[in-house]
Length: 282
Image 1 (tube, one colour):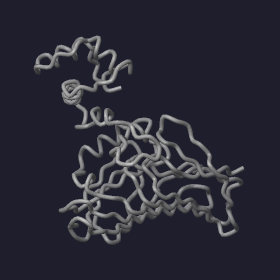
Image 2: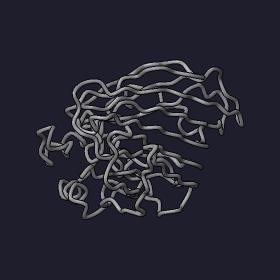
Image 3: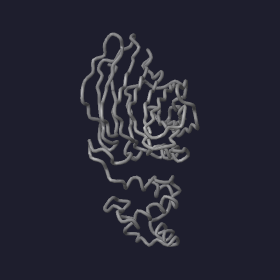
Image 4: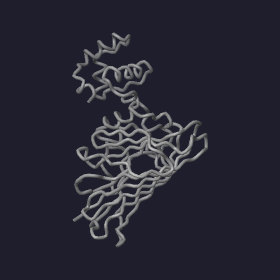
């Protein structure tokens, strides 16, 4: 996608790499682009890093794709690249490239709790989030949260009340929002922090039919609650999971929506990936 948008040919890319002292044949670039081979040697990975500069991509946009892919249930494989969680990761990469994520690799996500509210018109009303994190290194002061609208043409969610943290920079791209959240204090190794924030969904949005959470990092415990207005309950509701965006949704259970209008899912020891709920109104 990046090559197509740049308008450059593989031969012109080869020439630009050569001008920077890197020799890669056009045939090799073609193999990389088409997936017939994968850059593995250190010099090849370095060449991909220079390609990021030539194609004017954020740092890591391509090289992070070369990290070893984790098997399901395998810990310690590093964060998932946004391209494995979003069908078009460019808005996420653009936003993250403008924020300080230096604390990411020194954080452990102990728990994430979401409460998603749906109004009587079957449209999203709000999302309340509580995260508990622990520092695995010193001088950790922030976390970055990414959320999206259900469609890229919708306005991005609007940040509301904050608790136990303060707002940093906020970036918007094509229905996404990325929020920098500063802890109440700078964490040393072993310290924990809680952040709580709310998002609203302004505008005349389409009917909502699902809610999911996409995790780049492992999380020990996840809880999602969806609250429907009791005047308008869905006909059926399901839990689903996806290891990456490259595979279809896999329904794992049908959920009972009681008269109170609430339904929830939990998961322990999540290594990353996508988990959510979807429902049918009729």
